[in-house]
Amino acid sequence: MIKELRILFFIVLLSSCSSNEPTGPIGVSELPEEGEENPIDQTPVIEDEALLDLTQEETFKYFWDFAESNSGAARERYHPSDPSNDPLTVTTGGTGFGLMAILVGIERDFITREQAVQRLDKILGFLESADRFHGAWPHWIDGSTGHVKPFSALDDGGDLVETAFLAQGLICIKEYFKNGSDTEKNLSDKADALWKGVEWNWYTQNKNALYWHWSPTHGFAINMELKGYNEVLIAYILAAASPDQSITKEVYENGWASNGSIVSTETKYNLPLIVDHAGNSPYGGPLFWAHYSYLGLNPKTLSDEYVNYRDATVNHTKINYGYCVENPKNYTDYGEDCWGLTASYTRNNDGSIGYNAHSPSNDTGVISPTAAISSIPYTPEESMRALHYFYSHKDRLLGPAGFYDAFSPSNGFWVAEAYLAIDQGPQIIMIENHRSGLLWNLFMQNEEVQNGLDKLGFEYSAP
Image (cartoon, rainbow, N blue to C red):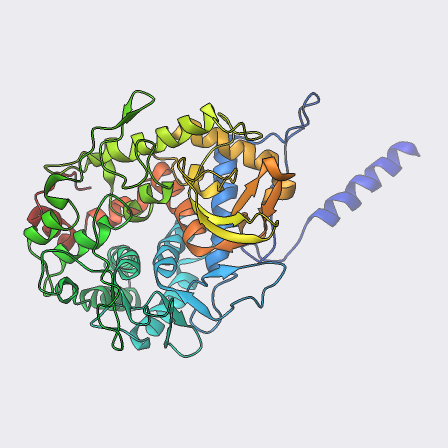
């Protein structure tokens, strides 16, 4: 009788665990079943590859389940406890990251190719009709109207850097679908035309540099020149790559490279910083400087007459890691397993949520998971240790769209239970570049990109 009851219980259990419901992102956390917990420290056990799978799939939901509903493009922010917080604000750069994330979603079977094409066509249609300023999109766009949403008092027009982040994604879309079905080829052509419509050379003001902003009301009043070293290299590469609106090499040399002044002789932890991180030497600036331009642009074999970009990105990351291991301010948990300082949400002094560009020179005890996770191509072992640490605190750090944006172990393990597109995107993309090189290969195989790199005198490897 006992044996029969056990068999009956087992059959009931199997029935309750089966389902005919479709799999895929549904807007809630779908964590895999864990292995047994360590009886000593009760740390959840998960293999590296499974953890990378989980991180990519959960983070993908930001761009799929929680996209702006009218356009399908990426929302600037998402607060799970307050989904009505800024629901219509589309971020241009984050949308570029989202385009690349959707390609990862296809490759990792989070969505079907057909689902992706349908969503991408919706996004590109929105971008075609949205406000543009001499070809450049604004930093923020109203998802319900396509009109510019001012980012600041003078910033109500074109944003060349955000546009470059978007164009990086458009080029990957172009390359991914160019040999597909007629529908896919049409999507590829549409993405290609969109990025080529940017008047890159107009944003020089007829000078030897690119400028970040232009407004039909305020003109070039902000007058912010794009100079390295920071996150804006991709704007110069694409400006040189443009077949019809290109810049000269002199614009690159004087602008980005400051005629050689971009080079630094600073060293920290026996690692040369390589490039001048203005105001952040010798530790380097926030780690997003090593991410945003390199989501498609592969730094691993990239160099010009001034900089070896593999060494610059790797050393920047290792110095950031070394600082957290040294932990000069004695913050709780900082070390080999808990590290990563970059721009993200932050904890204000009163405990409320704010925003800050965290770096070793601006360290407030706030760790941003995107910093270590997105650095995995540069520091694979160190980044995996951090990822396991974040997962070990998944009950507090892992929400409905991946790991939350920031946390502070030194302040009662305070967590910013919120997300930003520009922090979620690099995680799924850079993990994929680490695993397969997908986005690097797509971007670097583009003919115009190669022409631009050649024009500026770069050495690189094409896929």
